[in-house]
Image 1: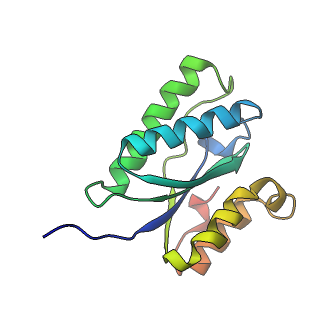
Image 2: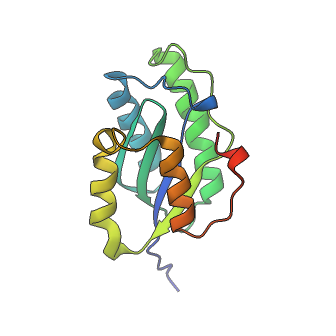
Image 3: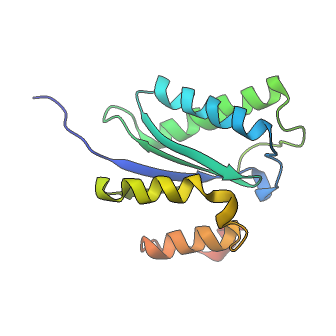
Length: 148
């Protein structure tokens, strides 16, 4: 039997201590690199965007790929790319964890628009507030100590 899957993810993570180091214009180069890494891992990328202190990735996960392994590979590869290309001089590594949220395909367009408008969105709400809201909206228990 073939594998049938329709899993749409939004993954969110940022630099260690949520430092606002992912500055423009190199942020766009970084996002393009992330898209390449995901495509090489058999994922379909719908949107990548973020601000100086975090990144959002919307993608379909291939059924043969483990999410935790994918995130580990993305972070390792991106760290090397950032350091080699000297994209963000103050980059000191990634936060330990990440947020991962699944969505139905009927939510895809709204999710893509949400991620595409991150700069405007974050004029009104901080990354901390956004992450907390995502966790609450998705009914995920959390401890505030791990969001900072």
